[in-house]
Image (cartoon, rainbow, N blue to C red):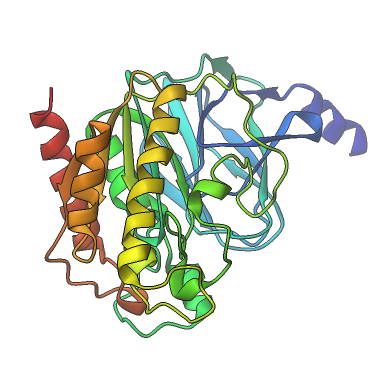
Length: 332
């Protein structure tokens, strides 16, 4: 029996990967991942495919040919086989659904066995990068109630239902998401984690770890850059110990540092058109930042915010995708 198992393992063929999002190299050719919305895709011919992943504490979804076949919600090492897939070419995909603010998961690969054939990885014509906060993450988006425990927030978050992946699917684009709930441009929700707003976290390959960091030549060059930051800067009152004398000083700092952040991003993303989400509490600030950087401000208002803790619902996320798509298609 052992010899048969070893023989089966020897004839398994790993699939070339299309990877969406940031990953860190791991032993044995594996990939560690922690940012929201990371995905892996492979193409093959054959009746079956195996997926090997250590989910850590996260939930992931497995799809074949665009149809979700399984959601893996059990922690730890999982090896899933999907068979009786029918003749012809297939695409297998694994999507990270939940948000990990610490730790990471590990993807070990897609594999086809005897009778299967690996094909070159997918390549889409467009690339989009999304930088943001909990709205970009899809925080608790599956919830039908604003009242959620922290466990429910984790389990009901689904980045695949957020505006970024919705928009990318419509535009036939690969994407990456660097978003972290509670973070802003200069200030985080309720003044938490001072000195670590989203721009400070952005260079990390795993959001909760200072190392490793993104290489300057990682090859990522998006066509579109969508940034949604500001809700957390202004959603809670300033505390006496915070460095801004008043809200006017906070808003001035927000504008200046947002401009600097965008100009820095443009240097490493020279072909990207930049779109900035402007929410109800910071629309005027974003309008000024857009004017100064050549970005396009996209006004988002009228959300029902019926998901966890008053976050955008599935309908809200779809509306945001609608408005961004209209702005993108109407811009030169």
